[in-house]
Length: 291
Ligand SMILES: C[S@@+](CC[C@H](N)C(=O)[O-])C[C@H]1O[C@@H](n2cnc3c(N)ncnc32)[C@H](O)[C@@H]1O
Image (cartoon, rainbow, N blue to C red; front, side):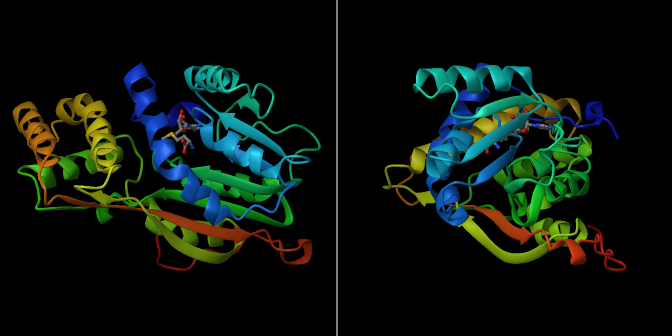
């Protein structure tokens, strides 16, 4: 498997980069809380994107800690460097270009991290197990692997805007067209197990709001931005006609002004530990289950 097989649906145009940055402001505090960093950890951040969360972790483990961000896209690395500079945090995180499917770690780095973390990455790779195996190998025995990802099936909007269900369905199928899994969130514990880690925690991070809450427009705008960004993939693949797509987006825009609108979503979150050396053989997959 080579890096060229991994295809990123959202791309890196400026509008999408703004969406990703805003998404970070909505979720980073909760992600950081769940990680419960103690300080001083060496952290590997896989698929580091624009790097806001890598910098949040780096601040939390300073002094003495270290964060290495691995990211495949040149544009995202450039964006991460720019954002760090603008925040006066140049040098806080080390950025390295590379593929999560074949982690570009140097001699002496593999097996030394205290934590390997990936968020919103496994949904964009055709072989998430390969990524998680690499993360398990990257941490020391006893080190943690934390995965956060989407199970797009869990979304609820009420009262449901016209055309939203077929639109979201088409969006999920656009992941499949790229060879990726839109419901990978439900598989996180199984992936940890099969990759040789010992799963030990499974939870959700609530990602929702309702009309009247100050952050509500930002949640709806994040969903609308994801959908707009995937319009071409959805329409060109014939997953939804362009006019249905556009009508559903207009309905979503109108919906967000309703006084009774509610939006629920949740990010799957799972943690495993690399077993001590004597137990460290990769676990056998459970028969008959897709992992
Ligand atoms: C949705 S963004 C999430 C970024 C960051 N983890 C966050 O939570 O803000 C997914 C990132 O994974 C990167 N990515 C996708 N496939 C990758 C791969 N095979 N190796 C490394 N990075 C990859 C994309 O370029 C993008 O920056």
